[in-house]
Length: 249
Image 1 (tube, rainbow, N blue to C red):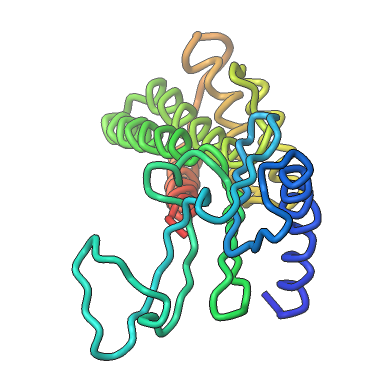
Image 2 (spheres, rainbow, N blue to C red):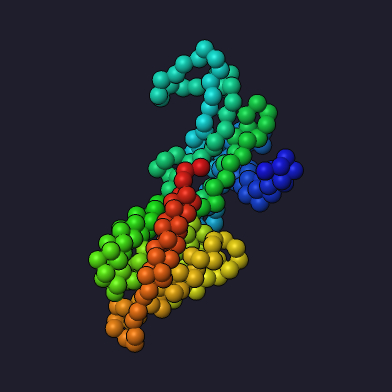
């Protein structure tokens, strides 16, 4: 991120979230007029409720710190500002990080450090990814045994779970209850604006169509070896991609 974009983003978040909260608290008598901001955090819940703004000691921020030469610490030891060489990698604590998006600020040596993670529902998305791996393994096993109906059904379940996992990372993309058509339509729109590979969308849609004759024995059902190998390759690529989307920042 360039310095210009960084400053513009910082100013925007301050004006939109932090400064109004400081003003509100001062007007309510919660903060003194001489309040000095040293750190702040905007917690984004992704469920339509207003963002939570935390100021100074309320903020829950984990940072990566490089200590000055000659200074050693044990886990849990306090670290003083003058013992730090560099500071960065601001994030939420491990027990909060999987569920919320956030923007975090720390004033370090007169300069504001900012970090953000706009992925929502990471814990739930990870559960979908783990289940998708199981369906993928079942699909591969079925394919090797020549069991094409369970192959298609399992692989559809895998790809649909992966599509849902990615949608869960975006705010308000999914309702609490979703149908197969909901996921397919929303994921198609998501991919069509450039958020993921077109092959992911195409494979979900093709498997959705193939699943009906495979699972419910309606109409003719055939899958060529070339087609099956292509489905498997795209599903594996999608698994790896969603896994990379869930790496801790």
